[in-house]
Length: 433
Image (cartoon, rainbow, N blue to C red; front, side, top):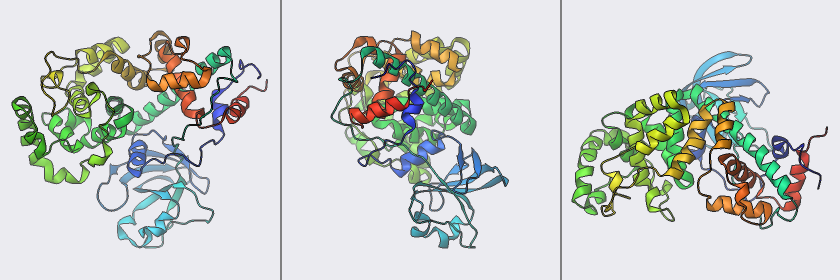
Protein backbone atom coordinates (compact mmCIF):
# COMPACT_ATOMS: atom_id res chain seq x y z
CA UNK A 1 0.00 0.00 0.00
CA UNK A 2 1.15 3.55 -0.75
CA UNK A 3 2.62 5.42 2.25
CA UNK A 4 0.11 7.68 3.98
CA UNK A 5 2.22 10.80 4.44
CA UNK A 6 -0.22 12.65 2.16
CA UNK A 7 -3.33 11.18 3.77
CA UNK A 8 -6.29 13.56 4.23
CA UNK A 9 -8.86 12.14 6.60
CA UNK A 10 -11.83 14.19 5.53
CA UNK A 11 -11.41 13.18 1.87
CA UNK A 12 -11.34 9.51 2.85
CA UNK A 13 -14.45 9.93 4.95
CA UNK A 14 -16.55 11.94 2.51
CA UNK A 15 -17.74 9.00 0.42
CA UNK A 16 -21.00 7.55 1.68
CA UNK A 17 -20.22 4.32 3.49
CA UNK A 18 -23.32 3.89 5.66
CA UNK A 19 -24.53 0.34 5.48
CA UNK A 20 -27.91 -1.29 5.05
CA UNK A 21 -27.68 -2.56 8.63
CA UNK A 22 -27.14 0.88 10.13
CA UNK A 23 -28.77 1.65 13.48
CA UNK A 24 -31.29 4.45 13.04
CA UNK A 25 -31.41 7.27 15.53
CA UNK A 26 -34.78 7.83 17.19
CA UNK A 27 -36.77 10.99 16.47
CA UNK A 28 -36.33 12.39 19.99
CA UNK A 29 -32.55 11.89 19.75
CA UNK A 30 -32.48 13.63 16.35
CA UNK A 31 -34.50 16.57 17.68
CA UNK A 32 -32.22 16.88 20.73
CA UNK A 33 -29.07 16.86 18.61
CA UNK A 34 -30.60 19.28 16.10
CA UNK A 35 -31.68 21.68 18.86
CA UNK A 36 -28.18 21.47 20.35
CA UNK A 37 -26.58 22.45 17.02
CA UNK A 38 -24.80 19.11 16.50
CA UNK A 39 -25.94 18.92 12.87
CA UNK A 40 -24.92 22.52 12.21
CA UNK A 41 -27.07 25.58 11.49
CA UNK A 42 -26.62 26.07 7.74
CA UNK A 43 -28.22 24.00 4.98
CA UNK A 44 -29.68 24.25 1.48
CA UNK A 45 -33.32 23.77 0.60
CA UNK A 46 -34.40 21.17 -1.92
CA UNK A 47 -34.51 24.07 -4.40
CA UNK A 48 -30.88 24.94 -3.73
CA UNK A 49 -31.41 28.09 -1.62
CA UNK A 50 -28.97 28.56 1.26
CA UNK A 51 -30.43 29.24 4.70
CA UNK A 52 -29.30 29.48 8.32
CA UNK A 53 -31.25 28.81 11.50
CA UNK A 54 -30.51 31.71 13.85
CA UNK A 55 -32.63 30.36 16.69
CA UNK A 56 -34.75 27.23 17.07
CA UNK A 57 -37.37 29.02 19.14
CA UNK A 58 -39.26 26.82 21.59
CA UNK A 59 -39.03 23.04 21.43
CA UNK A 60 -42.71 22.10 21.32
CA UNK A 61 -43.77 19.12 23.45
CA UNK A 62 -47.46 19.41 22.63
CA UNK A 63 -49.24 18.39 19.42
CA UNK A 64 -48.09 20.34 16.39
CA UNK A 65 -44.72 21.31 14.86
CA UNK A 66 -41.53 20.24 16.63
CA UNK A 67 -40.12 23.77 17.04
CA UNK A 68 -42.22 26.93 17.34
CA UNK A 69 -41.12 30.51 16.76
CA UNK A 70 -37.82 29.67 15.07
CA UNK A 71 -35.85 32.43 13.35
CA UNK A 72 -34.40 31.50 9.94
CA UNK A 73 -32.45 33.60 7.45
CA UNK A 74 -33.02 32.59 3.83
CA UNK A 75 -30.52 33.61 1.15
CA UNK A 76 -33.19 35.04 -1.18
CA UNK A 77 -36.09 35.88 1.10
CA UNK A 78 -34.30 37.22 4.15
CA UNK A 79 -35.16 36.57 7.80
CA UNK A 80 -38.41 34.83 8.70
CA UNK A 81 -40.00 33.69 11.95
CA UNK A 82 -42.14 30.56 12.03
CA UNK A 83 -42.28 26.88 12.96
CA UNK A 84 -40.12 23.87 12.00
CA UNK A 85 -41.29 20.30 11.52
CA UNK A 86 -38.88 17.34 11.43
CA UNK A 87 -40.00 14.08 9.80
CA UNK A 88 -38.25 10.84 9.02
CA UNK A 89 -39.43 10.72 5.39
CA UNK A 90 -40.08 13.58 2.95
CA UNK A 91 -43.54 12.10 2.27
CA UNK A 92 -44.51 12.13 5.97
CA UNK A 93 -45.86 15.66 5.68
CA UNK A 94 -48.79 14.31 3.68
CA UNK A 95 -48.86 10.89 5.35
CA UNK A 96 -49.19 12.43 8.82
CA UNK A 97 -51.89 14.85 7.75
CA UNK A 98 -49.92 18.05 8.37
CA UNK A 99 -51.37 19.59 5.20
CA UNK A 100 -54.88 19.42 6.68
CA UNK A 101 -53.93 20.43 10.23
CA UNK A 102 -54.26 24.12 11.17
CA UNK A 103 -51.55 23.66 13.84
CA UNK A 104 -49.00 23.43 11.03
CA UNK A 105 -50.10 26.61 9.24
CA UNK A 106 -47.12 28.60 10.57
CA UNK A 107 -44.46 26.08 9.50
CA UNK A 108 -41.81 27.72 7.33
CA UNK A 109 -39.36 24.79 7.17
CA UNK A 110 -39.89 21.04 6.81
CA UNK A 111 -36.80 18.95 7.55
CA UNK A 112 -36.78 15.36 6.34
CA UNK A 113 -34.10 12.70 6.81
CA UNK A 114 -34.88 10.01 4.26
CA UNK A 115 -35.47 11.10 0.68
CA UNK A 116 -37.87 9.56 -1.80
CA UNK A 117 -37.63 8.58 -5.43
CA UNK A 118 -40.95 10.31 -5.85
CA UNK A 119 -40.93 14.08 -5.52
CA UNK A 120 -42.63 15.11 -2.28
CA UNK A 121 -44.23 18.45 -1.51
CA UNK A 122 -45.27 20.17 1.70
CA UNK A 123 -48.18 22.61 1.82
CA UNK A 124 -50.28 24.16 4.57
CA UNK A 125 -54.04 24.11 5.00
CA UNK A 126 -54.09 27.41 3.08
CA UNK A 127 -52.13 25.74 0.24
CA UNK A 128 -48.97 27.72 0.99
CA UNK A 129 -45.84 25.85 -0.08
CA UNK A 130 -43.54 24.92 2.81
CA UNK A 131 -39.79 25.05 2.22
CA UNK A 132 -38.15 21.63 2.54
CA UNK A 133 -34.58 20.58 3.31
CA UNK A 134 -32.87 17.28 3.85
CA UNK A 135 -31.22 16.81 7.23
CA UNK A 136 -28.08 14.68 6.95
CA UNK A 137 -28.06 12.45 10.02
CA UNK A 138 -25.21 10.01 10.47
CA UNK A 139 -26.02 6.64 11.97
CA UNK A 140 -24.02 3.97 13.69
CA UNK A 141 -23.26 1.06 11.44
CA UNK A 142 -22.90 -2.58 12.36
CA UNK A 143 -19.27 -3.65 12.78
CA UNK A 144 -17.57 -5.78 10.16
CA UNK A 145 -15.85 -8.95 11.32
CA UNK A 146 -12.56 -8.33 9.49
CA UNK A 147 -9.66 -6.12 10.53
CA UNK A 148 -7.32 -3.65 8.91
CA UNK A 149 -4.35 -5.05 10.83
CA UNK A 150 -3.10 -7.22 7.96
CA UNK A 151 -3.06 -4.30 5.54
CA UNK A 152 -1.79 -1.29 7.49
CA UNK A 153 1.72 -0.70 8.86
CA UNK A 154 2.28 0.73 12.33
CA UNK A 155 3.68 3.92 10.83
CA UNK A 156 0.66 4.35 8.58
CA UNK A 157 -1.68 3.62 11.48
CA UNK A 158 -0.05 6.35 13.60
CA UNK A 159 -0.41 8.85 10.76
CA UNK A 160 -4.06 7.93 10.21
CA UNK A 161 -4.74 8.38 13.93
CA UNK A 162 -3.17 11.84 13.89
CA UNK A 163 -5.27 12.94 10.90
CA UNK A 164 -8.43 11.46 12.40
CA UNK A 165 -7.79 13.25 15.71
CA UNK A 166 -7.51 16.59 13.92
CA UNK A 167 -10.76 15.89 12.05
CA UNK A 168 -12.53 14.97 15.31
CA UNK A 169 -11.29 18.07 17.11
CA UNK A 170 -12.42 20.39 14.31
CA UNK A 171 -15.86 18.76 14.26
CA UNK A 172 -16.29 19.11 18.03
CA UNK A 173 -15.04 22.68 17.94
CA UNK A 174 -17.52 23.59 15.18
CA UNK A 175 -20.39 21.80 16.95
CA UNK A 176 -19.67 23.63 20.20
CA UNK A 177 -19.66 27.01 18.51
CA UNK A 178 -22.95 26.16 16.78
CA UNK A 179 -24.42 25.43 20.22
CA UNK A 180 -23.02 28.72 21.53
CA UNK A 181 -24.60 30.66 18.67
CA UNK A 182 -27.97 29.01 19.38
CA UNK A 183 -28.07 28.93 23.18
CA UNK A 184 -25.16 30.96 24.58
CA UNK A 185 -21.79 29.90 25.98
CA UNK A 186 -23.01 28.83 29.44
CA UNK A 187 -25.88 26.67 28.14
CA UNK A 188 -23.63 25.09 25.51
CA UNK A 189 -21.12 24.12 28.20
CA UNK A 190 -23.85 22.82 30.52
CA UNK A 191 -25.31 20.65 27.76
CA UNK A 192 -21.85 19.30 26.88
CA UNK A 193 -21.14 18.40 30.51
CA UNK A 194 -24.55 16.73 30.82
CA UNK A 195 -23.89 14.65 27.69
CA UNK A 196 -20.47 13.64 29.05
CA UNK A 197 -21.90 12.62 32.41
CA UNK A 198 -24.39 10.40 30.59
CA UNK A 199 -21.45 8.66 28.90
CA UNK A 200 -22.30 6.50 25.88
CA UNK A 201 -25.25 4.63 27.42
CA UNK A 202 -27.24 7.61 28.65
CA UNK A 203 -25.85 10.61 26.77
CA UNK A 204 -29.16 11.52 25.12
CA UNK A 205 -31.37 11.24 28.26
CA UNK A 206 -28.89 13.45 30.12
CA UNK A 207 -28.85 15.98 27.29
CA UNK A 208 -32.66 16.01 27.23
CA UNK A 209 -32.87 16.50 31.00
CA UNK A 210 -30.42 19.41 30.81
CA UNK A 211 -32.24 20.98 27.86
CA UNK A 212 -35.68 20.63 29.42
CA UNK A 213 -34.62 21.94 32.82
CA UNK A 214 -32.31 24.63 31.30
CA UNK A 215 -29.28 25.95 33.16
CA UNK A 216 -31.01 28.87 34.86
CA UNK A 217 -33.65 26.69 36.51
CA UNK A 218 -31.29 23.73 37.10
CA UNK A 219 -28.98 26.07 39.01
CA UNK A 220 -31.80 27.50 41.13
CA UNK A 221 -33.06 26.43 44.54
CA UNK A 222 -35.43 23.88 42.98
CA UNK A 223 -32.95 22.76 40.30
CA UNK A 224 -32.10 19.34 41.70
CA UNK A 225 -35.77 18.48 42.20
CA UNK A 226 -36.50 19.60 38.64
CA UNK A 227 -33.69 17.50 37.15
CA UNK A 228 -34.68 14.35 39.05
CA UNK A 229 -38.37 14.90 38.35
CA UNK A 230 -37.88 15.46 34.62
CA UNK A 231 -35.64 12.40 34.49
CA UNK A 232 -38.50 10.34 35.93
CA UNK A 233 -36.51 9.36 39.02
CA UNK A 234 -38.92 10.80 41.60
CA UNK A 235 -41.47 8.02 42.02
CA UNK A 236 -43.39 6.64 45.04
CA UNK A 237 -41.32 3.46 44.97
CA UNK A 238 -38.20 5.59 45.54
CA UNK A 239 -39.51 6.06 49.10
CA UNK A 240 -40.70 2.48 49.46
CA UNK A 241 -37.26 1.06 48.68
CA UNK A 242 -35.28 3.75 50.53
CA UNK A 243 -33.59 3.84 53.92
CA UNK A 244 -34.01 6.72 56.35
CA UNK A 245 -31.05 8.69 54.96
CA UNK A 246 -32.43 8.50 51.41
CA UNK A 247 -35.92 9.46 52.54
CA UNK A 248 -34.50 12.56 54.21
CA UNK A 249 -32.72 13.41 50.94
CA UNK A 250 -35.78 12.80 48.78
CA UNK A 251 -38.41 14.59 50.89
CA UNK A 252 -37.44 18.19 49.96
CA UNK A 253 -37.05 17.11 46.32
CA UNK A 254 -40.56 15.68 46.40
CA UNK A 255 -41.93 18.81 48.07
CA UNK A 256 -40.47 20.97 45.28
CA UNK A 257 -41.35 18.60 42.42
CA UNK A 258 -45.00 18.20 43.41
CA UNK A 259 -45.61 21.93 42.99
CA UNK A 260 -44.72 21.74 39.27
CA UNK A 261 -45.28 18.07 38.51
CA UNK A 262 -48.64 18.41 36.73
CA UNK A 263 -47.36 21.20 34.47
CA UNK A 264 -44.18 19.26 33.67
CA UNK A 265 -45.54 15.73 33.16
CA UNK A 266 -45.66 16.06 29.39
CA UNK A 267 -41.87 16.50 29.23
CA UNK A 268 -40.80 13.88 31.80
CA UNK A 269 -38.47 11.38 30.12
CA UNK A 270 -39.83 7.96 29.27
CA UNK A 271 -38.28 5.35 31.57
CA UNK A 272 -37.44 3.25 28.49
CA UNK A 273 -34.85 5.84 27.46
CA UNK A 274 -32.62 5.04 30.44
CA UNK A 275 -30.10 2.21 30.46
CA UNK A 276 -29.09 0.77 33.81
CA UNK A 277 -27.67 -2.66 32.98
CA UNK A 278 -23.93 -3.18 32.49
CA UNK A 279 -23.08 0.14 34.17
CA UNK A 280 -20.51 0.52 36.93
CA UNK A 281 -21.99 1.65 40.26
CA UNK A 282 -20.14 4.98 40.11
CA UNK A 283 -21.68 5.67 36.67
CA UNK A 284 -25.28 5.02 37.75
CA UNK A 285 -27.62 7.66 36.23
CA UNK A 286 -28.97 8.61 39.67
CA UNK A 287 -25.50 9.52 40.90
CA UNK A 288 -24.49 11.20 37.65
CA UNK A 289 -27.65 13.32 37.75
CA UNK A 290 -26.78 14.35 41.30
CA UNK A 291 -23.38 15.41 39.94
CA UNK A 292 -25.07 17.42 37.18
CA UNK A 293 -27.22 19.17 39.78
CA UNK A 294 -24.05 20.07 41.69
CA UNK A 295 -22.48 21.43 38.48
CA UNK A 296 -25.58 23.54 37.79
CA UNK A 297 -25.74 25.02 41.28
CA UNK A 298 -22.04 25.93 41.15
CA UNK A 299 -21.89 26.99 37.53
CA UNK A 300 -20.84 30.53 38.34
CA UNK A 301 -17.75 29.18 40.11
CA UNK A 302 -17.04 26.87 37.15
CA UNK A 303 -17.27 29.79 34.72
CA UNK A 304 -14.79 31.81 36.80
CA UNK A 305 -12.43 28.83 37.15
CA UNK A 306 -12.37 28.34 33.38
CA UNK A 307 -11.81 32.06 32.76
CA UNK A 308 -9.00 32.31 35.33
CA UNK A 309 -7.16 29.01 34.83
CA UNK A 310 -8.46 27.31 31.68
CA UNK A 311 -8.13 23.52 31.68
CA UNK A 312 -6.59 23.49 35.17
CA UNK A 313 -9.51 25.51 36.50
CA UNK A 314 -12.03 23.17 34.86
CA UNK A 315 -10.34 20.10 36.35
CA UNK A 316 -9.98 21.70 39.77
CA UNK A 317 -13.68 22.58 39.90
CA UNK A 318 -14.71 19.04 38.95
CA UNK A 319 -12.31 17.47 41.47
CA UNK A 320 -13.76 19.59 44.28
CA UNK A 321 -17.39 19.01 43.28
CA UNK A 322 -19.31 17.74 46.26
CA UNK A 323 -22.78 16.65 47.34
CA UNK A 324 -23.75 15.61 50.89
CA UNK A 325 -25.85 12.66 49.71
CA UNK A 326 -24.16 11.52 46.50
CA UNK A 327 -20.64 11.42 47.93
CA UNK A 328 -21.85 8.37 49.92
CA UNK A 329 -24.38 6.70 47.59
CA UNK A 330 -24.30 4.90 44.24
CA UNK A 331 -28.04 5.21 43.60
CA UNK A 332 -31.34 5.85 45.36
CA UNK A 333 -31.75 2.23 46.45
CA UNK A 334 -28.21 1.37 47.51
CA UNK A 335 -27.01 1.34 51.10
CA UNK A 336 -24.84 4.18 52.34
CA UNK A 337 -21.13 3.79 51.53
CA UNK A 338 -18.67 3.41 54.38
CA UNK A 339 -16.36 6.11 52.98
CA UNK A 340 -17.12 9.11 50.75
CA UNK A 341 -16.28 8.75 47.05
CA UNK A 342 -15.44 11.56 44.62
CA UNK A 343 -18.51 12.70 42.74
CA UNK A 344 -16.68 12.52 39.41
CA UNK A 345 -13.61 10.30 39.01
CA UNK A 346 -10.34 11.32 37.40
CA UNK A 347 -10.94 9.50 34.10
CA UNK A 348 -14.43 10.98 33.72
CA UNK A 349 -13.05 14.46 34.43
CA UNK A 350 -10.47 13.91 31.69
CA UNK A 351 -13.25 12.79 29.36
CA UNK A 352 -15.26 15.95 30.19
CA UNK A 353 -12.15 18.03 29.64
CA UNK A 354 -11.73 16.51 26.17
CA UNK A 355 -15.35 16.60 25.09
CA UNK A 356 -16.80 19.63 26.89
CA UNK A 357 -14.02 22.08 27.75
CA UNK A 358 -11.47 21.79 24.92
CA UNK A 359 -14.03 22.26 22.11
CA UNK A 360 -14.82 25.64 23.69
CA UNK A 361 -11.21 26.80 23.32
CA UNK A 362 -9.34 27.97 20.23
CA UNK A 363 -8.12 25.17 17.98
CA UNK A 364 -4.49 26.00 18.74
CA UNK A 365 -4.99 25.73 22.50
CA UNK A 366 -7.08 22.59 22.15
CA UNK A 367 -4.40 20.89 20.01
CA UNK A 368 -1.68 21.63 22.55
CA UNK A 369 -3.82 20.31 25.41
CA UNK A 370 -4.79 17.14 23.56
CA UNK A 371 -1.17 16.32 22.78
CA UNK A 372 -0.09 17.09 26.35
CA UNK A 373 -2.97 15.37 28.11
CA UNK A 374 -2.64 11.70 28.97
CA UNK A 375 -5.79 9.91 27.91
CA UNK A 376 -8.14 8.16 30.34
CA UNK A 377 -7.67 4.46 31.09
CA UNK A 378 -8.41 2.75 27.74
CA UNK A 379 -12.03 1.71 27.38
CA UNK A 380 -13.14 -1.53 25.79
CA UNK A 381 -13.93 0.40 22.64
CA UNK A 382 -10.37 1.71 22.44
CA UNK A 383 -8.91 -1.75 22.95
CA UNK A 384 -11.12 -3.13 20.17
CA UNK A 385 -10.13 -0.23 17.93
CA UNK A 386 -6.42 -0.94 18.44
CA UNK A 387 -6.91 -4.64 17.68
CA UNK A 388 -8.90 -3.76 14.58
CA UNK A 389 -6.28 -1.34 13.28
CA UNK A 390 -2.93 -3.00 14.13
CA UNK A 391 -3.84 -6.46 15.40
CA UNK A 392 -2.97 -5.94 19.06
CA UNK A 393 -3.48 -3.64 22.01
CA UNK A 394 -0.72 -1.13 21.35
CA UNK A 395 -0.14 1.36 24.23
CA UNK A 396 1.87 3.68 21.94
CA UNK A 397 -1.26 4.30 19.88
CA UNK A 398 -3.44 5.33 22.82
CA UNK A 399 -1.11 7.14 25.21
CA UNK A 400 -2.31 10.73 24.78
CA UNK A 401 -5.82 12.13 24.54
CA UNK A 402 -5.09 13.02 20.92
CA UNK A 403 -4.12 9.40 20.15
CA UNK A 404 -7.28 8.07 21.74
CA UNK A 405 -9.52 10.56 19.97
CA UNK A 406 -8.04 9.68 16.58
CA UNK A 407 -8.31 5.95 17.18
CA UNK A 408 -11.94 6.26 18.22
CA UNK A 409 -12.75 8.33 15.13
CA UNK A 410 -11.14 5.81 12.77
CA UNK A 411 -12.90 2.93 14.42
CA UNK A 412 -16.26 4.71 14.29
CA UNK A 413 -15.96 5.68 10.63
CA UNK A 414 -14.40 2.59 9.07
CA UNK A 415 -15.28 -0.38 11.30
CA UNK A 416 -18.41 -1.15 9.29
CA UNK A 417 -16.38 -1.66 6.11
CA UNK A 418 -14.43 -4.67 5.00
CA UNK A 419 -10.64 -4.13 4.93
CA UNK A 420 -10.75 -3.77 1.12
CA UNK A 421 -13.51 -1.15 1.28
CA UNK A 422 -11.78 0.70 4.12
CA UNK A 423 -8.50 0.77 2.20
CA UNK A 424 -10.30 2.11 -0.85
CA UNK A 425 -11.66 4.93 1.27
CA UNK A 426 -8.22 5.54 2.77
CA UNK A 427 -6.76 5.56 -0.74
CA UNK A 428 -9.27 8.20 -1.77
CA UNK A 429 -7.87 10.36 1.00
CA UNK A 430 -4.31 10.33 -0.33
CA UNK A 431 -3.11 13.63 -1.72
CA UNK A 432 -2.80 13.62 -5.48
CA UNK A 433 0.20 15.95 -5.27
